Amino acid sequence: MLNSTFSHLPALEPGSVWLVGAGPGDPGLLTLLAAKGLGEADVIVHDALVNEDCLRLAHPGAELEYAGKRGGKPSAKQRDISLRLVELARAGKRVLRLKGGDPFVFGRGGEEALMLVEHNIPFRIVPGITAGIGGLAYAGIPVTHREVNHTVTFLTGHDSSGIVPDRIDWEAIGKGSPVIVMYMAMKHIAQISANLIASGRSPSEPVAFVCNAATGAQQVLETTLGQATEAVTASGLEPPAVVVVGEVVRLRASLDWLGALAGRRLQPNPFRQSSQVLA
Image 1: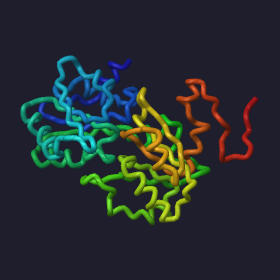
Image 2: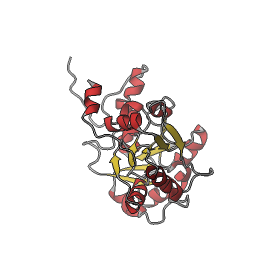
Image 3: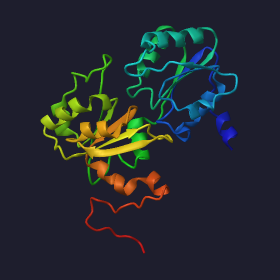
Image 4: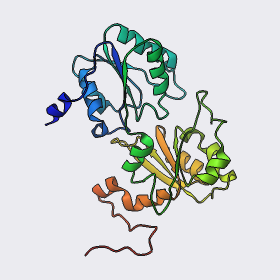
């Protein structure tokens, strides 16, 4: 059945590039197109956040090139990565650029695609499940819930220089977005928490840090906005992490489905005083 499904999907052609999102970690969250591309690529240029289990889907003859960028560590320059994709495609290779999450959500996939356009390289965008949605789902935290919020804001915790972006209107976000999902924010959580509290958010508002989301190493820390800095330091947790601020974090007590599989007893909906349960 799977082979017949693949046969109707487009092929990764020689001299072209697929910009593919690998999702937050679990290889089961790869799209069919992503899995097909992994099986056809001559060269896979992958990020640091791509789970090795996803790379195992590459065909045996594929060449794997690491192009990861991690904060505070020597990393390839973005322009060099983009030009490498052009070089490989011009050599007639089937090139798969594999990025954690979704290539267009804080993944700089747009920059790489624009470089391909500039050099007349054919390409395809294969979206992936972004960590800010899929990673939180694996922690039992929905980004929207009818009883809590009708809006959500996604933002990055640092810019290209490694500091908190100065173009973020923290006051507007703090006042206008019930739920805030942050990528690459753990390192600067002290400043971010202070910014949000100064904008009017309560120090007691729930916050969760989901580290190594949707992998076997996933860890979740639940705390509050006012205690976030101390809690992270005491926990010893390190990036990569997705951070979520808002009342939806309270739903984890009811929706931690991975914890339930391991024996955790889930609690009733915290936002309803009484629930109708079928006998």
